[in-house]
Length: 425
Image (tube, rainbow, N blue to C red; front, side, top):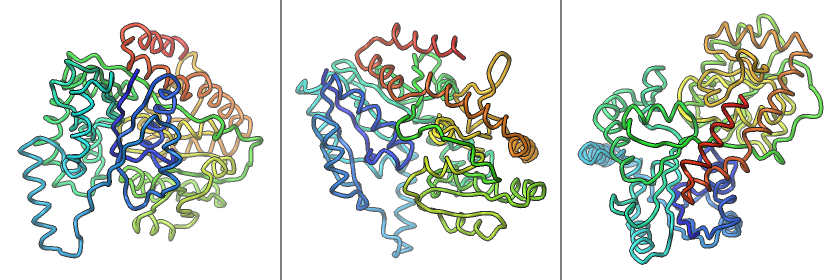
């Protein structure tokens, strides 16, 4: 089968962020049995060596540059340009970032592939790529969108938690653009894939008639191996790209509202914030007692192995979280919010405890205190979590489900996978 995969995010190396990780691992699986042509965009930070490495994993790699960011030094012109983009976004019911990334050259490539029968399937990796799919395409080629998370749900969540960087703009976007946007673009596709049941329900609210498949993320078990032993101590870690709004909010919430009480009980406690591109707001957290900011690290797995507990105090954002899956695969006890555990069955009747759940500061403090005080409990969570990931959240399993949607076995194979997941949990 000939698959045309569109990703405005350059998906290599598969360690930069959730979009890169998912896109690369799915194309890696599909390439085993199919011809995958990847159309993607790059920025100045993408190295030539990364391009050549990615080229090895696809039948053909078609590259275009991302449009340059607006000139921030010309303040007045920039304000006018932002205003113009906002008006265009409202009129077209398309988010400004989607319009900004749009490439006429990519559109020409996609049109050519469809009109000349060069592909059997088109997959859009992340909703930002939906713009290249014309409504009439689905009559001649299978069109699939892999929605990593609901933009509408994500923005609404940020506003509710006070985590939006521009609340005034986002409130307007929510009511004038995003709901219309997600409802409209869904109708263009033959198949829709999301990563969690929560996201599935978000889209069913907009379009109850949709048949939506849930295919969660996986973990590279060769990279995130289980730790050899419990390091003990009082070391907490939070992992993520530290220029992302949901990660910034989570780091601030934990450092300011949770950590002080933990340190009152356990004064030696440290809180490591490990992730690339920490913003000034994140760096300022390093002034708080016990907080350490690492920036980019060479191996997240090593940092996880050296930590007593991994916390995932996310308060916003839809979709399955790679950081949670990776910590569980590494055998590190996890204390996380409902958002951090989205798509995962970690507790309940007849369910072996795989992680502790916390949403309020006191819940985090109690769970962390229990784990600090009880090595046997840490060992139990470590074992249960690793087993859970091995059985249900590998890229092999995710790739198999994605391939079944691509080749058209939606109503049999993929639903059987989902049924099997439900039975096992």
